[in-house]
Amino acid sequence: MSAIRVDLFSDTKTRPSAAMRAVMAAAEVGDERAGEDPSVNALEARGAALLGKEAALYLPSGTMCNEIALAVHCRPGEAVLCEAGAHIVGFEAGGAAALAGVMLEPIAGTRGMFSATQLRAQLRADNLQAPLQRLVSVEHTTNLGGGAIWPLHELRAVAEAAHAANLATHMDGARLFNAVVASGVSAADFAQGYDSVWIDFSKGLGAPGGALLAGTRTFVRDARRWQLRIGGAMRQSGIIAAACSFALDQHLPLLAQDHARARRLADGIAQLPGVRIDAATVETNLVYFEITAPHWDAARLAAATLAHGVRLCPMGPRRVRAVTHLDVDDAGIELALAVLGEVLTGPPR
Image 1: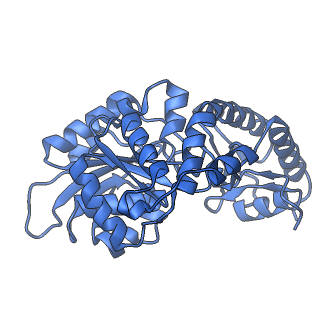
Image 2: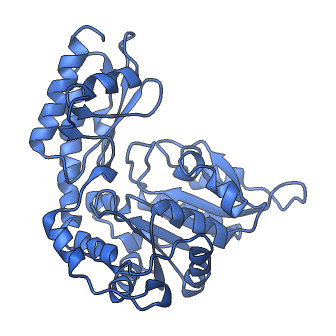
């Protein structure tokens, strides 16, 4: 395999810069599980304020944030309503069932989003023969939906419909800051009406790990019990939390560059043969396209571009994803387009 020259597989592929590593090395730390790590405590307070919540909890990963939120909001046997392509459905190894013991009731939305009208159509009266519906979860931005940004009015309407039916609300905000930078709407405004929300630092923000789960003080206290229960306490985790604070300070504004490069990539792909893309739908840093050439599929195309040093992510038999991030510059985008053009116009391998 050729050395990877441009890695568009995911925005989790970023590596800490020298400046970030220096901040990590100098971080003041303590026993996080005992509430004694000043770097973690500062990050939790800052994150809660950014998200407009009373408190926040620093956890190793966004998946753990989702799973703990499901477990706090629900009891085993209850139901969570979410979009059919949500991360909790297909990308968390069945954790919703294995850890929280909940049923997932998918809603067939559009680009990873559903309307308040669609939600109300899925609601049912209390029925002893059916799982009790307890929680509505949204994903922002949407992954399988191509990085789509929820309209603020629709997020509010979904939350209002859920609360009117006495259901709690949760926001998977793995790429919430991409939506913030692209739209100009604050994270707190997007999260208004959601009883819990989390943000990821290991994707577009470029930290080596970590996520923050936020909500009321009571919710976060219950979440801390689950953190201990499933091994999420990291002790002197201020070393990583310092990287997350650095990312908020230095990398947050750079998301706009990722979005511009994603649009350039989408516009370039639209000019190539054998693929189909609606470049106008690319709002943030996720670029999805479909392969139309009969002699290619997603796996073979990704293997062919990787042989030239460009790494893409197959997301189905004929669907491919490319993700821009801190470690992809303008030259990388042009190289990726050149390689894709060469592969698609050449003989199949």
